Amino acid sequence: SQQGEEDPQALSIQEGENATMNCSYKTSINNLQWYRQNSGRGLVHLILIRSNEREKHSGRLRVTLDTSKKSSSLLITASRAADTASYFCATLTETLVFGKGTKLTVNP
Amino acid sequence: EPEVTQTPSHQVTQMGQEVILRCVPISNHLYFYWYRQILGQKVEFLVSFYNNEISEKSEIFDDQFSVERPDGSNFTLKIRSTKLEDSAMYFCASVRGTGALYGYTFGSGTRLTVV
Image 1 (cartoon, rainbow over the protein chains, first blue to last red):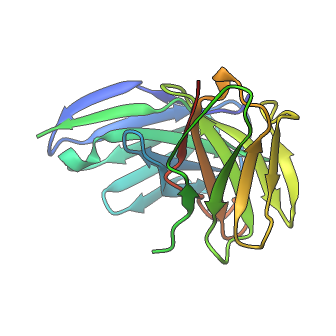
Image 2: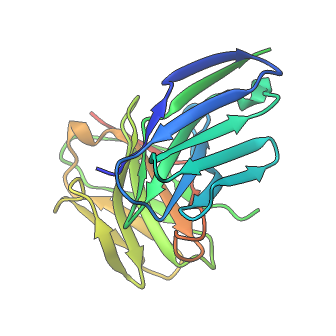
């Protein structure tokens, strides 16, 4: 399976700190995407990084991709309480396959 | 910002009954998807739909499931005879073009409870 596996499963930090979540996958991919899900709600697309890209930024988000290690990381800088959510990586080959997610809690 | 709209937000049904979950994708999007998420578990791919036909489906998407785009705007998922294990959040998504270039836009989901 090419599904992503996030690490850690849960992360609790203080407001203002940075949060780093990692994702590993098993097969070659077209791209890797990160999504956010607030409890019981839909998934919100955050950022897409193509297999030929190594780093991408969007606001307070920074994503890296290392295709040789089949891994990606999502960094959220200067976290806020409103960033509390589950974060999923998803890998695209024929279909978009989601990992199990990291539950991030940002304490005020 | 354009949204994917799903109705109903919550559906309770008796085991063995048929349910239809409805989705209105973003109007200029071309690719449509259904995913499901059993409580506490990961988001699972069910089916993708392009050019009025199924392009990919997972092992979950067996003969009990079907999809339709009856009128060029709605995109429906039908479960013919629901089982208890079909209880989950069902998410519809659409993409403007190939997913190689664009992220998916998801709806807020339909929580299906089979009793």
